[in-house]
Length: 106
Image (cartoon, rainbow, N blue to C red):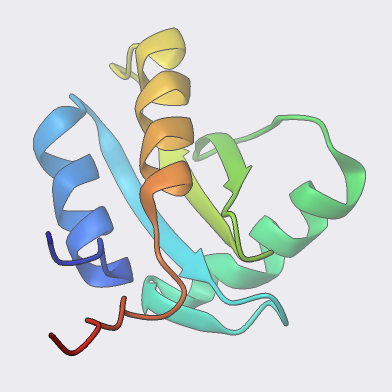
């Protein structure tokens, strides 16, 4: 059994995979930040409510839902490869576990 991907580990993976990430946040199903830049939470919730990517002066904001109803959002920089970043974000959001797996006793 492998350990579940935690919000903090997902952020670290995204930083390693992506060229230009300015900020990122993982939200629980209620929109409360679990890890990352809490100041990005309001913008991420607004993006998820509207369902379209938003571009502001500080860069494009991308978001993906996690299996448990939470979300993962990232603020991309000028040099980000957006299609690749969208892909990485979606895969990491899919992999996020809301609760650690439990091991059955032998």
